[in-house]
Amino acid sequence: MAGPVLIFDSGMGGLSVARALREHYPQAAFCYACDNAWLPYGVREDSTLTARIVRVCRAVVSTCQPSVLVVACNTASTLALEQLRAELTIPVVGTVPAIKPAAAVSQSRHIGLLATTATVRRPYTQQLIDNFAQDCRITRVAADALVIEAEALIGGAKPNAKRLAAALAPLWQAVHADVPLDTVVLGCTHFPLLKPWLEASAPVPLNWVDSGDAIARRVGQVTNTLVSNHHDGRCFTTAPTASLQAGLAAYGFFAPHCLSLDDVFSGDLPLEN
Ligand code: DGL
Image 1 (cartoon, rainbow, N blue to C red):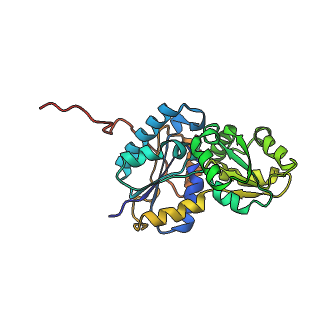
Image 2 (image 1 turned 120 degrees about the vertical axis):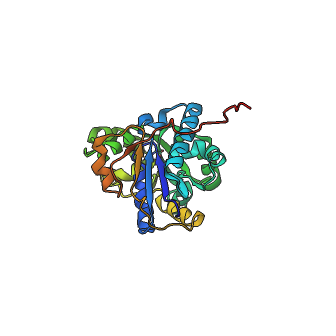
Image 3 (image 1 turned 30 degrees about the vertical axis):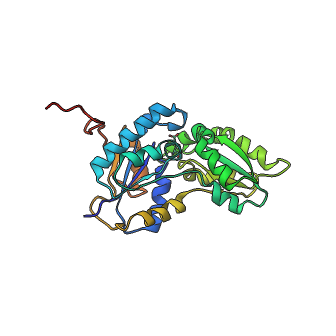
C-alpha cells in the first residue's frame, strides 16, 4: 500500500502546511511529526540543529514509511534539505520563504520578510532574494516570539497582544517608510496560523504571502500516491503535550505518540567479521 505524506516541523507550524495539503488533496493520507522537545529551531546553532533534524526525520520516516516527506519548516529547509535528500530514499519537499511570489505581487517593491532569526540570516534566503527580488527593498524581521504565540494558540490560548505588537513593530515602521512596504512574506510556517491577528494589527491592508499552496502543488508533482489509507491522522512528537490534542484534532490529527529516537540505526556501525 502507498505510504502517507509525512509533514515535519519543529512544532505546530507545519499545521498551516497540512491545511493547504488537505485542501488540495482531501482524499490523501497525512501523518504529522514535530520535534517540539527542541523548539524553537530558529535560535539554535546550525551544525547541532542539522544533525538533530536528520536524526528526527530518519526516525519518523522509519516509523511512518511515508511516500514523501514534507519539511514544513523554513528554518529546517534552508539549513538541512540537501543533507536530508542525501540520507533518505523518498522524495523530500522543502519549505522556503516565498520571496518569488512576493516579488510578483509587490507594487511598491518594498517587501517584509517575517521569519525566525535563523531564516532571515541564512545564505539560502539571501540567494532567493538575489535571484527573485533583486530590485526590491527587503525589511527582514526576526520574530521568534511569534513562534511561541502560534504554539500557544494551538494549545488553546489567545495570542498576547503586547508580544504581538512588539514583534511586529519593525514591519509597521516600514509601512510608513519613504518607499512603503506593501507585501509581507510569512517565512515561518507558524505565522499563517496567526494571520487573522496579523491582518487585524496591520496599519494598512497588505499582501500576505506564504508557501502553503506552492508546497501542495510540489507534493502533487513528486508523488502519484495521494490516496487514502488507514495511516491518515497519525501524529508523533518528541515531547507529547496533552494541551495540543484539541488543536491537532482541528487539523485532522490524532493524539500524538512519543517519537523514540533510539529505534533508529543512526550511522555506519562497524561490523565484526
Ligand atoms: N516553523 C518553523 C519555520 O518555518 C520555525 C519555528 C522554530 O523556530 O522552531 O521556520
